[in-house]
Image 1 (cartoon, protein in one colour):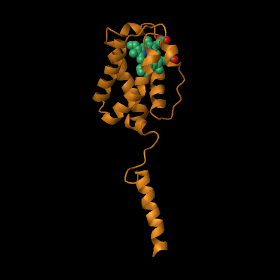
Image 2 (cartoon, rainbow, N blue to C red):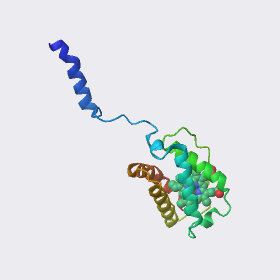
Image 3 (tube, protein in one colour):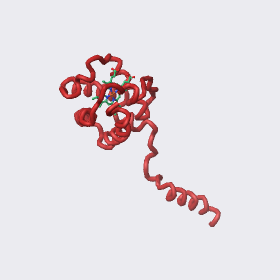
Image 4 (spheres, protein in one colour):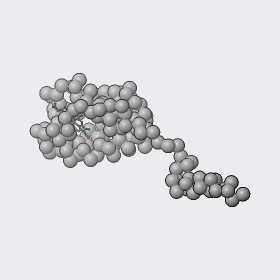
Length: 145
Ligand code: HEM
């Protein structure tokens, strides 16, 4: 009897200690999938570009930017950040934003546009917050460079 129960008890103790047995294991690309994978990210960045175009406060920063290249790199970066099958090939955030004197208000505007587009695309709120949490630390590398 003791011998038969031992594996069961071991399993139970392992379950309790991991506290994860009742939950589905999270796939490494869980956020990427929640954002709609490649097609979802393309839609997200296209929506963001439309918002930027209409925002008089920040659009001037992009006057000399190669937009198709920026679009491709931003999609690539969001794909990699969210665990998708991509490798970001652009410049570092510090390199690419140096010389633009982007203000805190500019940064907030861009984030607000991103939030609006994610809501419009009905991205799960948890995924929205996860993405914002990944972008927030980039603030230091983007603003007043
Ligand atoms: C977390 C926030 C941000 C992320 C993830 C991000 C991401 C990127 C990426 C991936 C690039 C392309 C890099 C390359 O050219 O190799 C880029 C370029 C650029 N970003 Fe950002 N960016 C952010 C915030 C901002 C903000 C707030 C502004 C201004 C309102 C801005 C303006 C620009 C401009 C103007 C370029 C193009 C630079 C050029 O033409 O050479 N970015 N950004």
